[in-house]
Length: 124
Image (cartoon, rainbow, N blue to C red):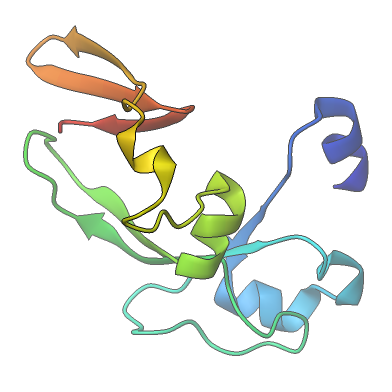
């Protein structure tokens, strides 16, 4: 995974099931954020490598308006979100509050797709 990160120039994340992470993955992978699937649980099972997860996939049968069929449902740890997006808190008296928000918007069929600093939000 380190080689993928070096060659791609992008941070990588490990996706796996909770039981597999607990049984087979060791400390050499602990430096990478964990995206763990554990359906039907309110929190994924603990394992000895990661003390917390970055993203938790809790369902593969979710429903989202406008999408037919099942959708994977995920929860992202807020601290991890801030790290990957590099979002800084803006105080009310911060001069950045007066700067206009920069974004791109485009209609794809009947959905508006917004891009804010490389983050994509569909159906807003």
